Image (cartoon, rainbow, N blue to C red; front, side, top):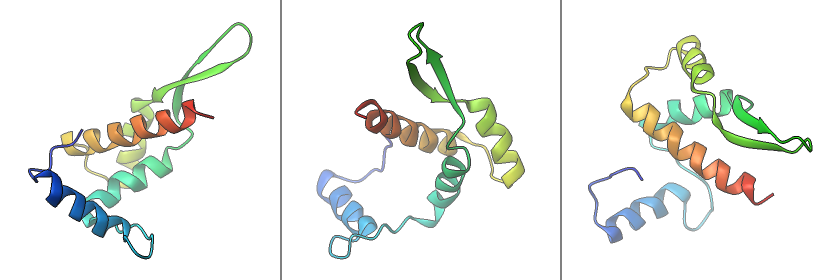
Length: 99
């Protein structure tokens, strides 16, 4: 999980402000927008495993594809971007495993 340096209550408050507790809108911090843009641009770029029965299992993002997309989009590739993409990847896998 990403380290924010905030205590639990402060983190909840910031998260509440981001998701808009009352109007249910999501307000992304400016510094996270490139991460989300990149994740959306590479939404179909997953590594998969195929079982002999034909069932497909998603393993995670294809990070080579993400690197190329980031270059094309002019997004700086750094440790913070990698951490953000990893958070999105883990959350997506949790949701997709339930379907």
